[in-house]
Amino acid sequence: MPKNVTPEKHRLGLRIEAVQKAQLAISMGFAFPCSMCRRLWKAMDRGETDCDQGNRCGGPLGGKSFRRYQGPLDREAIASHCIRCGKPQSKDGAGFLRHPTEDGGTVGLCAHHSPMLDDRLVPVEKMLVKP
Image 1 (cartoon, rainbow, N blue to C red):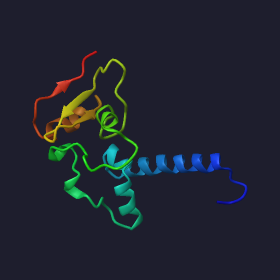
Image 2: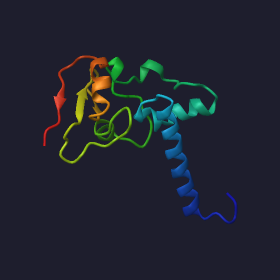
Image 3: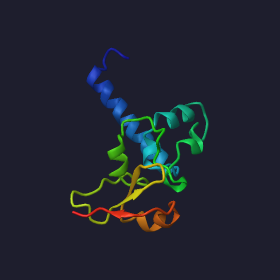
């Protein structure tokens, strides 16, 4: 680290870099949890174009809830943010769908992305979050 960079500035720089990487991954078509996953970024740093977990980690299109995810999001964060854009669920839950997955997890979809993705998810009983 250069001498003129304080530890606080270094940490801030790392956070900004992480946000930029996540935005890049989402723009490339990766799901929000994938965009924050260390496994994806290790693969990308090696010059690969996909995560090394492939279908083993799996998103909701395969009936899974990112069980092999490694990153800052916990299970509740994955369920309470849209898997496509990362938009958080509002306090009242209005317009937000929590979709249960076959592996026992739950993923979230915002009102904008729910119509685009909901019919492509593995069909299981859907739970609409109510206030």
